[in-house]
Each structure stands twice: as C-alpha cells, then as structure tokens.
Length: 165
Image 1 (cartoon, rainbow, N blue to C red):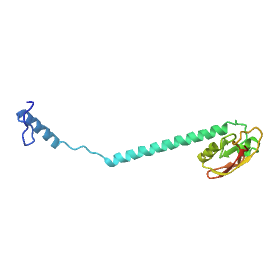
Image 2 (cartoon, rainbow, N blue to C red):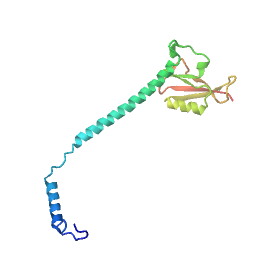
Image 3 (cartoon, one colour):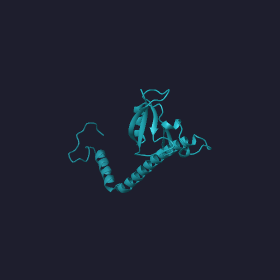
Image 4 (cartoon, one colour):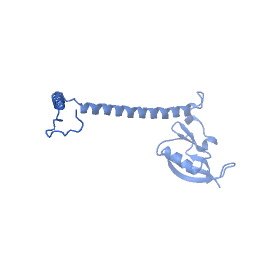
C-alpha cells in the first residue's frame, strides 16, 4: 500500500487494486453477515432480578444483624435470668429504658446524648424535670419514665429526670 496517496471519491478505498479488492471484500462480508441478536427485554429482566436479589440480601443482612444484637442483649443475662419484662423495678431500673426486649441504660448520659438516643429509637421526648440524688453529676440523666420493667415502642413518649444542679 502506498502511504500518502489520495483516496478516490467513490469511498471504496485507495487507488491500488489490492486496496480496492480488500475494501470490496470487507463490504461484502459486512453486508452478508447476520446482525447479532440483542434480547433487550431479557437483559432488563435479568438486571431487575439481580437488583431485587441484592436488595433482599441487604435487608436480610440488616435484619440478622439487628436480631443478633437483640439476641446478644437478651442472652447477656444468662439462661437462668428471668425475662426482662417480668422483673421488678429497682433503683438501677429507674434510668433503664426497656425498648421491646432491649435494655437501654440512660443513667449518667448528657441530656443531648439522651435526646439523640431517643430519636434513634423513634421515641418522643416528653417532660424534662430535675431531682436531687446523692453522688450524681449535675445535669446528667438519673431517671426515665416509663422505666424498666415497662416496655416502650416506636412513637412512645419518654420523660427524663436530670440531676439537679
């Protein structure tokens, strides 16, 4: 092939017989070859199934992780411990929130941290009061209402009692 020869105006290649024959052969091959079949609907269905499978796997992993955390919290008392809802209230329970089967210890928390914890649990903050208690850090949480053994759920209102300053 020549390097810098001008191409013919018919678009069929260069001026040499070899170039013309090569271009003609390639065009004939391209015109007689069947076009590949793309199953766009099938591809879309497969992508949709993969996406649904991925979403299902992520939801299952989150559920297992949450259930595992709940089981670890409940099982932490040992097999001979009575169920959390069946225990009687003590001074230590005054600042313990029972969210379903999960105990949330609120004693000693800063009020902002307690509010953030309530928001994460989808609970509403009710009244915030003060009371004096020996040995508490002023401004920290010393009680919640309702407290353990009462169970709270999503949307319930929780009142906080803070250590008097």
